Length: 140
Image 1: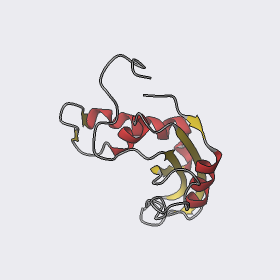
Image 2: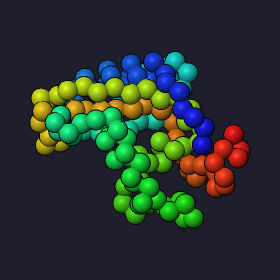
Image 3: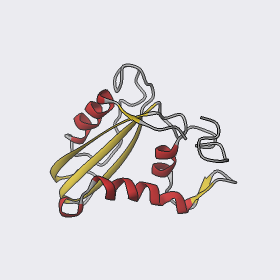
Image 4: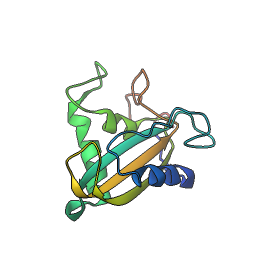
C-alpha cells in the first residue's frame, strides 16, 4: 500500500462522467489518452445515493466496507468487493474524485441523487492480489 495523492486530471474525468448522471462505468477508461494523459487504463469507483445522506466519507466507507467480502488467501469475493480492492490496490498511487447532483440517475431508481465518482491511476483490479501481505509499508 502506498499513499495516494490527488490528481486534477483524474478529478476532471470523474466530474465530466458524473455530469452525465449515468449509473455505469465510463466507457473511455481503457482508451489511450481519453481518460488521462498518462494512465491507461484508469480505475473507477461509483457511488450513487440520496443527496440527503451523501458525504464523501460515507461513499468511501461503503467501498471500504466490502473488505468483509474479500478473501486474501483465495483472492476471491463473496459478493461485491471490487470497490474495496481498487481503493487498496498497491500500485494505484493517484486519485481524483468528483460529485454531481442529479435529479435522476439513469440505470438506477434513485432520484435527487449525489453521483460520486473516483478515478484511480494506474488502474487496479487486474489479475493478482491488490497488495502484498505483511506489515504496513514494509515494502514501500
